[in-house]
Length: 153
Image (cartoon, rainbow, N blue to C red; front, side, top):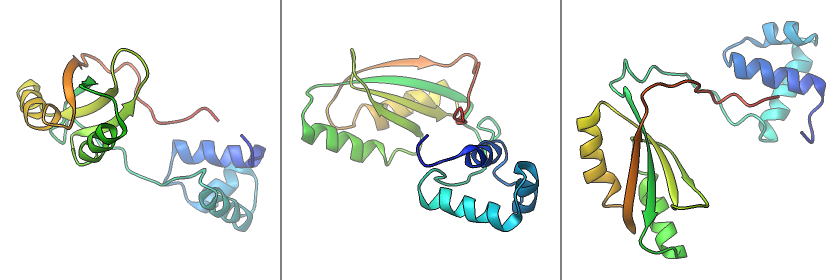
């Protein structure tokens, strides 16, 4: 990791584990003064190592218990189709992630919906009408074995 030292890595690891840790507790944990720690956090944020803070919500309690992955194959691969698809998929609230991939299909979507009935509506009303969609394959998740956004530091 260019631009970060051992103390920066400690800060990043601590914040990944608990983004609500106070600056005083963070300073104590890494062995720096509160002022020096706050300066480092500001620099790490300014330099883009820290992109933001958010709460981790329980999808089941919020009516989004079904996690699905959807392979999307486009009818043609051209810049205008890619742009139109990306613009529209960004507006779909159920889509948590969308990745253009190399391989047998063009995009891999990760989405959360209430149940299989909601997924069927989502597929018909949101995914299939997206620009250029020719074919989809859906994988409903039976069990989440590991789900994290934490990066190895």
